[in-house]
Length: 336
Length: 232
Image 1 (cartoon, chains in turn purple, brown):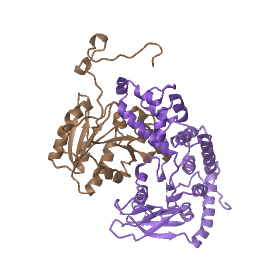
Image 2 (cartoon, helix red, strand yellow; image 1 turned 135 degrees about the horizontal axis):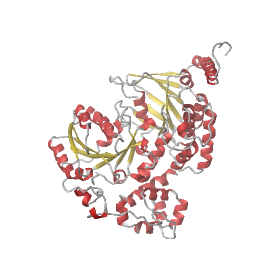
Image 3 (cartoon, chains in turn brown, green; image 1 turned 90 degrees about the horizontal axis):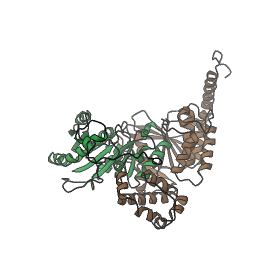
Image 4 (cartoon, chains in turn orange, brown; image 1 turned 30 degrees about the vertical axis):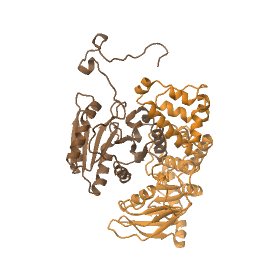
């Protein structure tokens, strides 16, 4: 609040330079902003009530919104609480059978979630996102750093516990890849947006099978390129300590590099997947059955050995895919 | 009786979200009533009836839909109370962006969708800007980054609201939203209550059925555009 009060008494010109989001806020209400020596407080006090009514707002409500907005904005720059451990305390499955488990996940770990459609994978992910406290249908409890977490995790848009990478990667915004990532960076108020934007585009191009230029419209990116862009964006821009991934499709993206990138950023990664390679890259697999966690499989040494031959198999298919792409035939596939 | 006003642009997913919440409330054995406001026609009342909730439909026809809303909502609340509803939900579309059905001290919800474009939040007036809870729908169709950018635009125009992503098709987020409904305003009547914001007004010849175009036919509360050079 202190920071905010002093901001109100600064001349408008200084406010607009130091806190450009104040201009975005005021113009999004349809107000005209001009730099000047008068204070922000003076500007607010002298708004024409009739004009405000036309804009669908009144002075009191505008002031309340500005207070809330500044409070949120000034909080974004505060460091986020570090999440060193996420604990899932079991509830019960759909028939009421107890899960009997207490599972602690640490940053840099990759946990796969497996089970047929409708088995309750989404509910588990939702329980984590909601930091459930026995108040969801599964009665699970989620602890952060071994404690019942602050309820701010539930509703705050600044402190989102979980960033979710859904299977669907469509874009609807009419922007280039660079503009889009810049807009995202600005909404997160990062200190050096240009640097972050360049870093994300570079990473995305390293992950994507086919490279793309920064000025490519997001709506023309291929499926693989979109996924690569979103994974790089999540790794570099998102402050959320937990990444939920709903399957990384095996097309046009280096999935191993993608996972490594997220692991490097010290995130806890939960991934719903049935892909054998991704599943074996994980440290553990949670098997979901009838709405509950039925068992936990640690990736074994034997499994990891098999990963090598699975990757060979995968590369074979990839090579064949490339032959199709380049107009080659598959009449002779020996020696691939 | 817990009462909430739910509004949002046409086709933003209001009905789907409400249906998902109804399912979650019915799991908790609650008696629910819905009032659906629309202009010319709606079949949504049948969707609600299928769920076995008490439903009332109000069509404004030739009248301004929000003026129609405010002239009827008190009776709707009485109706819900007399039928011993534990929850009453009013659903109405905000058609001109300057309207808002939200009432002081009554939990106000606005539903808006990710596909409507990042310029949309600032275009919507008090319906969004004065809501207590903002639900963003159709999140499964866009990327995480787009969801975040869109939510930040909503936050910019209504920083005090609880902003939630809810999927009207899969129901993701509906359970969590329902827990907010459990804390909604608890009332028996709207007597003495006030709208959060005045409704757009006009009292001119066209309100009274005039159809002819031209200065000589215009009477009452008329406002003219500025065509002088330099004006926007």
